Image 1 (cartoon, rainbow, N blue to C red):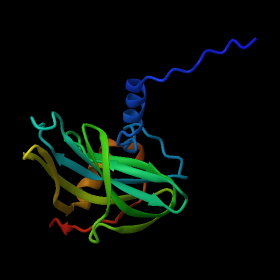
Image 2: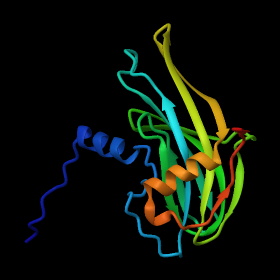
Image 3: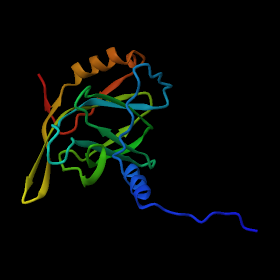
Image 4: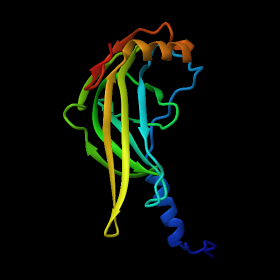
Length: 191
């Protein structure tokens, strides 16, 4: 005798699962008490987004830098409106800033190849922290003839290595003794 129940699928449930699966997954930032082992590396910088909530979409837009590595790992550094200082843990490998990840209200919209001034390769060694730069993105949404138009603008990129490295070493005391390298992506140097 077969006691199995027939599977009923609910369209709203499947839609909810699909939407959750499509969330723009950013790599988690490390905690302030992160304890390095010497086997990993870190990427850091400031990633600030100025994205106002709008009446058109009812939410805010997001952006992330997608970094793909030869070991198969992929990291997405998300921009933040609050606390833009980001430090993420990565495995040593040869990596490339390959794509920009666009989102709205945390939901994935699409990716685009990184523009030439941002497409950057990096050989990541264990036991080091790599400064990528200070980035400012602004966003806008408008509606024309019933069509929602979203724009993202990389408004500023700066090399502020000394100041941001000092901030990281103060905020993440266990990383204070770790050697750092300035690997600023497509930026103006701050004097």
